[in-house]
Image (cartoon, rainbow, N blue to C red):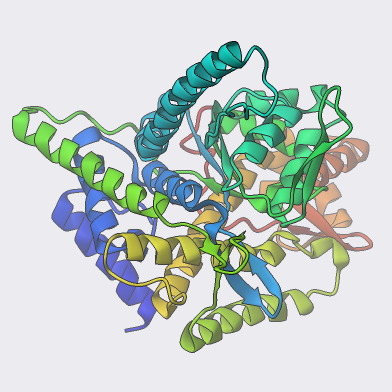
Length: 469
């Protein structure tokens, strides 16, 4: 039995034992302790694995911040920051697991706020006694989570929290819709630059000295409804590469889970125990610090490599993608998204390694082959979600007549065959050409050569059959 089949079987057996449907998410890629927490929260709080697990990945990355980097290849290194959007129909339960995963981070931010208030009171008293603030350092608020902000405010928060910040927005389309209201889309440029590891600068109001962040670490996570994904994909984010930097999660099963009857104190206790265990794990990740030079007292991130077996697995996996891409002769058929996958996999593997360390199940000397395998399988899941979302958006954007024409055609097909099918539908040749134009615009077909088209192949199940129309 191959490793992937064995792991899938393990996932299904574990789900069956727990009385939880197999979702396709590679739950067993997590450390055992995290798996137990997820299964308990799914069983006792009715959370969906496909929302809780990615939210916990994001929370762990937020806690780690920029303290650890992993080597991708040569001098190409990266921190563990992730951009995640959780997609689903209204009321599917996206927000509660997100809040649960980030509860330890909110607690940490709350403690920082209380310290800031106390420090500010002491500062004000000192200024009052000295009758001036000369030589008295004014306290600043350090926090990880930001929600309502301008691009300048985001960079200011990161400047005072050099470890990293996390954009956490419940309905993230509101953020994207307002992104261009400030400084001609500066927020989007910041997200693109930060993800790629470039330094960030922003000028402060009434000051010639900019905020400068040499090694930014910005996580982003939010939710949105499936029917709003079309808005996101029409904003030019595919062309500028932002979509390729985002991991999407969309449950294959869109039905709500019925509440369990007979809820009792034992269920409450088990749920509370799971929450407490997650708090302990995140607290240990938060306690990880930078490497401090004994000579200069300068803080520097730790850099770890993949173990040899893990690197071989990682390179073989990406080389297979390169081979498939090189076999494509038509530039219009090239998908840019797989070229970002090595960074995604490296980051997820680093998070999995950190979680294994925090659970007492591994170390932080290097990234293991187990972590790489788990990250690759998670990336496969996120890619499947993305393709199912693209299929939903494409189908939702096209009129029924054009999709009916498409259903009558072979793959590939010629314009002559399309015109012949149009006659069966009693539409004119001009209308058929308009249908093909619409299908091409919405990426349901691609022109492969003069007069010949190929249907776009989306992996995964059709979302349109179970989503709101």
